[in-house]
Each structure stands twice: as C-alpha cells, then as structure tokens.
Length: 408
Image (spheres, rainbow, N blue to C red):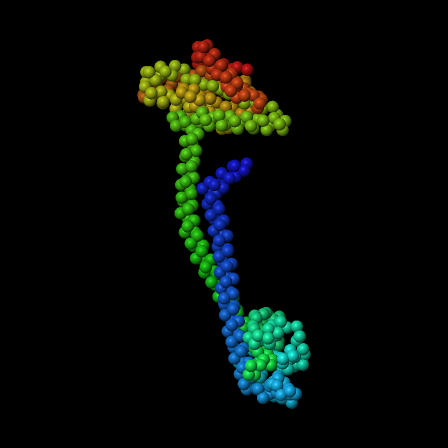
C-alpha cells in the first residue's frame, strides 16, 4: 500500500499536484510575508512621522509656555510646575494651538511622575507610578512612541470618538542637561493609518494577481508536459505488458495477473465468503508450422493476430488472456469451475474453426486445441495447475486436434 502511494506521488500527475499545492502555499506565504512586512514598514514610518510631529509640538509649547510650565524648586532647581492661577489660561491657549495638529490629548508630567497638566482636567495631580514608557523617557531622555487603537477618545472639543488610531508619544522636557519631566502627546493618525491598510490590501490584490498569472504561466506548460509524459508512461507500460504482435498480455504480465487472482482468492477464502475457483485454458494453434511454411511468417503472424482477436471476443471483460509463447495462448478465468472453463474453451474452439482466416487474400481453415484445468485453493502451486492444463492440451493434440480436453 505504501509502495503504491509512493508511486502515485512520484507519478507525473502526483508531482503536478504537489507543484500546485506548493504553489498555493508559496503564494499564501508570500502574501503573508509581504503584507506583514509592508504593513510594518509603513506603520513604523507613520509612528516615526507622528513622533517627529509630537516632538515639534512639545518643543513649541515649551518655548511659548515655559514661564507657565517651568518653575523653581525650593533648592533653586528648575521643575515642572503649573500654578492654579495659570492653569485655565494655559488650557485655553493650548487647545487653540493644538487644534490644527490632530492632537486629541496632551499631558505634562513632572519628574515625580505626577501629571502637572492635562487637557483632561480630571487626571491633573494624579501619580502615574507604573508607566514603563514614562520611566524610559525620564531615564534615557529619548522620545518613545507606540501606535494604539483607543476604543473611546474625547477630543479637545469634548467630542467623543470611537475606535481611534492614536500614536502616543512621550517627549522629555529638558532644561539644560536636566530632564525635569515629559510631555505625553496623543496624535490621531486614523486617516493615515486607514490609508496604509487600504494601500496594503490593494498591494496584496495586485501581488496576488501577478503571482497567480506567474504560477499559471508555469502550470500550463507543466500540465501539458505532464499529460504528454503520462501518455508516454502509459504507452511504455503497455509495451512492457503487451505482446507487440497480438496486442494481448505477454507472458510476464500474464503471470503477474495470475498472482493477483491467487491473492484475491486467498483473501476471499480467509473471509469465508465463498469457495472460489480459477479456471485455466491452454490453447495451441494446430499445424501452425505448416501455415508458416505455406504462407510465410507474415501469413503466420496474421493468423496469430486474427486468432487473438477471436479468442478475446469470447471472454468476459475481467477474464485474462495472453500469449504464452509461439502459437500458444493462456486464458485465466476468475470465479470459474472446470466445467465452465470447458464451455468457454469450446466457445473459443468454434470461434477459431467456423470462419476461415483471410491470409494474403486466401481463405484458409484454422483450428486449435484446448486443455482446461481449475484451481480452487490459493495454496496450490500455479505451476501444477498449468501442468494439468498443458496435459489436457497434449491429450487434445494426441486425440486428433481441434478439440477440448479438461483435466481435474
């Protein structure tokens, strides 16, 4: 079973199926890799661009509102500090300033991680102690950004928006060499991100079309070549199993088919479904040497071809007939007992003798002798059964030819 499966997979059709499967997998893999790769590249560029805009906005705010945002600590050091009296004015100015930039929210942290200012006044004064990104920015002094999808966002005008793509950017607040706090800027990038997603989808559609055309251009000639190769293989198998002169099975393939029938009979006997038998008929064209002598080898070949056609016409579709050697033929009759094998042999005998053969324009009478036997045990050596059939053929020859002899 495994050998047959291996042969099927190694056949031209099996290889073509594997090519089609690998092509489909390759197309899927290419689409996934390209889609993910292009999306990540465009996404990172979007984040980088948003981070640059957020940094520029934060620096502009610090430059314009430094006197409000930056105060002095008791030790004289600079710190983020927004006086309550300045908060309302700062908020109004920032909302007006930030409107054109697509910013929906902004926070200002001091060095203690406390929110000193926010466009959301409800969170002012709260400590954000567990914020890894804020920690990294305060320690490294480098901006940090990420793209997130917010289920619900209130913009600077108090309008609630849903499923918004936002780039959150932390921008350090520097005074000289010191980092005294950080901005957190929420930049709405939904339109830009939607364009990226649409562009990736369209790119994948175009790429899929190109790949399908490319693989189809490869598949069509491969399919044509495979079909031709299969035809050649079928022809080679026919040549390997067929007698070229008569078109019947050759001796080697004949014995292979006998082996198959014996194995089938063995399986059925083990299942105890019924007692099966195989009938064998050995055939020999009478006086064939005389035919060759009188009509030449070409005439003899024509007799063998016509005899093969007539013999085969007497059989069932699942019966097996082959050229046994020279002018001898062997017929294998599955599920046939000795009496039935004798009847089949008689039918073939009449098919040979009743209609003259046309050999090079001459009508000649041809007869054949038949020996029949049966095997009803899968354990029986096939050579023994064939010897019985051959013995029947010998008796038919000795008894005057043109007759059927069955041997039990």
